[in-house]
Length: 172
Image (cartoon, rainbow, N blue to C red; front, side, top):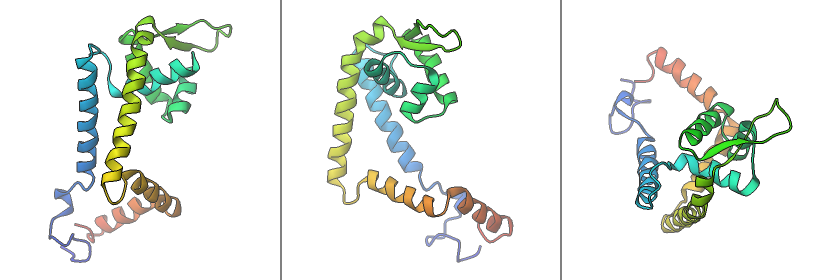
């Protein structure tokens, strides 16, 4: 092992996953939110569905692309989300005058659930802000700082450099 690239504790990089605790924390939070939905009799609701439902409730029928742009995800990801929303009977096709464009709208069931979903969203945002006040360096600031660093030098470049080192046997 090359000491210059091995973590100080001697751990092989193949035995690490630096951001796994972050993913686990976010997953646990999502599970807690999903438990609230189940407790409220909304077992069909998953956290990833709520943002699109709120946007449709606030802005009316939208195309998949419009919704993807508003939520800041890919068209493909929103298409999958829209399929899940449709399967759960939370959206339906909206009437349109342009036959080339398909829009979706909230179903009656989604309109019924929307006040709770909006309240939960606000409560979640308030809870995250409360958590950030308890820690010395808020996660939202960490994300902004990482984005600034990636603007200076993109992740892909950094990854390619480290891959070259690993292929040359300089990363273990």
